[in-house]
Length: 456
Ligand code: EPU
Image (cartoon, rainbow, N blue to C red; front, side, top):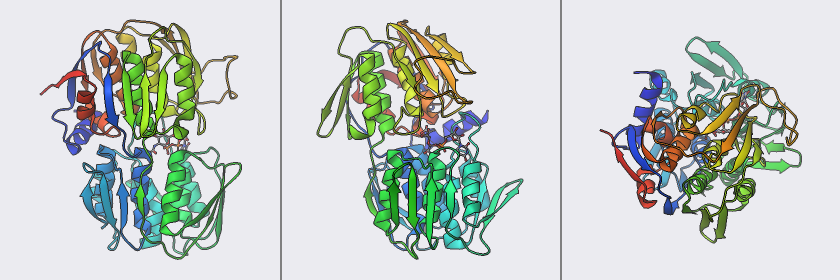
């Protein structure tokens, strides 16, 4: 069994999926209402932030996804006592007895997550040392951690690369730092926040990521007693404090999940109400959705996304850091673009390997060309960068069912949408990889009246 299949099965088991393979009868519009809970990319970081406090923290709207279970186990391995259950959406995290975890246990858990790198700052503060095994996460490019390690060094940490992982110590304590990121990396910005909040003096971070999930993490840290100001031009100032308390926080909704279901509504010609989704964090997505010919109603408690009839239109979009079009939105959207009349272009500028999922769509009948070296296009919004790629999608094309092996989280969700859009039967395996970041899939598919069954 390869390691991807192992990861997928483990993830499926964590959230109680009956099997890691699903059989879908596609070609029916998805219609109904689903709840979107807290964002994976905030919740997992807020859970890590609890390590910094002297008191219990309460996190609400937690999604029941495999990544949350992994971070619960990682925190548990470091002595954090957790009560509550992602199934009910509330976790209480008590960091009273933080300790060094068992490295074999941490290693086993880390196979499927990149979150351990964010334990560094909190563990250095609490215990004076952190050990980070090899990192997992989705296989969507090299995903280096050099910005993280450089930031930790700037705070005075000593980084030792060992065959088994990375050993980080601070024999002379940590001090405030002036850091400029080469790229507004989400993870590296979080690293600086989670480390800088408790070092004495003022830390300045330039070229910071300003994604809504980062703003929500700053809100969490402020509730704990941190002093962080977001200045113009992607600069964040952190005034270190001696100690932090706990927090009581309702997580920001998952805009990636909302955008994924929106794309599913459009691709299948249906209508989905995403309860909990909000307009302000999704403005860029909403513009593109409307340009393609999708419609939406913004309501008090959520957003309804639907196909209003008529032909869908092609679009040129480029992924970018916030407030640009998120890299995590492009994969589900591409399935909808296979149904648009004309040629669309999607440029991926954040990761170097995020179009692998299109192979399965092509097999299903989609007309997609991937240009690995990118594509010169007069409609480009930002200048050409080295790691970009382009997908050229010409539609509309009928999709027909096939067998698909999910390669990663977002690519996997597009496989699911493609299977739901396609005529006939599809068999989607490695479903657990989707459960890393999408909660309650079975219940949601049922609510949307999808026709599916698990393969034993
Ligand atoms: N990068 C480096 N060096 C580093 C860190 C990043 O070169 O030390 C590069 C990456 O290789 C990538 C780019 O910088 O090409 C952006 O990476 P970033 O650090 O911003 O991403 P991340 O923190 O690893 C988070 C989300 C991703 C999301 C990106 C962009 C989490 C756990 N992951 O990743 O989410 O795509 O930000 O918004 O928060 C997903 O949810 O499926 C997912 C992949």
